[in-house]
Image 1 (cartoon, helix red, strand yellow):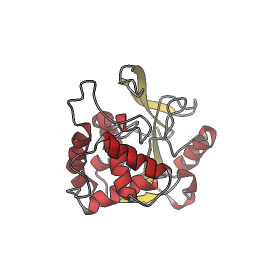
Image 2 (cartoon, one colour; image 1 turned 90 degrees about the vertical axis):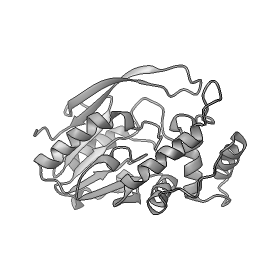
Image 3 (cartoon, one colour; image 1 turned 180 degrees about the vertical axis):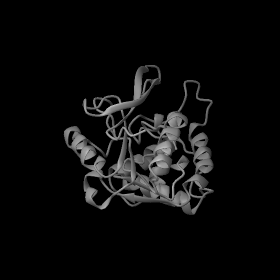
Image 4 (cartoon, rainbow, N blue to C red; image 1 turned 90 degrees about the horizontal axis):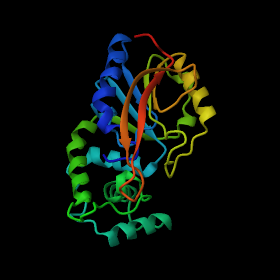
Length: 247
């Protein structure tokens, strides 16, 4: 699913690293605390897969897709006027549209997956139907979401003491870049959280920068296009960090 900060294009690099840890460390439970568009967890092979996210509309959509892989909820076309109507109803907190429908329109019809925050999704020529492209991709992803547990929960509410010998992959909103609409991170708290979680679990974190005690085990440059002018992109180096340097 198109999602701001999605690792879909990097999954081919990141997933093999995760799978190597799962195999070498005999991991039976894989957990993501910022599951987003589920573009990594849907490719992981593990006995138990659990995805958490603070966005309740997103989680409602992911659960809906599990139960209706054809996405019969999705309209055949999403005009700018309809997109605007759903966005305004969400802003005004009305019950005109369900959470899963709101999320469907918000993620499939917004520019660059910037959930009702980057404008209506369209290309320069206006010839591409970006909404339907994304709905089609979500339908293709749907079977891969089978058997994943999805829960709406803030990572700060996780009881670290309950987890042992699990693998956590964390892909938080990156520091000093465009923020997500429903998630602002206290990064010092987040770093300490990762340290505590790492004592009894494998923890892998996607970020551009982490404190010096975290080791970078993989990196790759990529162009990131987030601005709504559709033209300006910047080169960033994606990195994968851990405190559990055991492989």
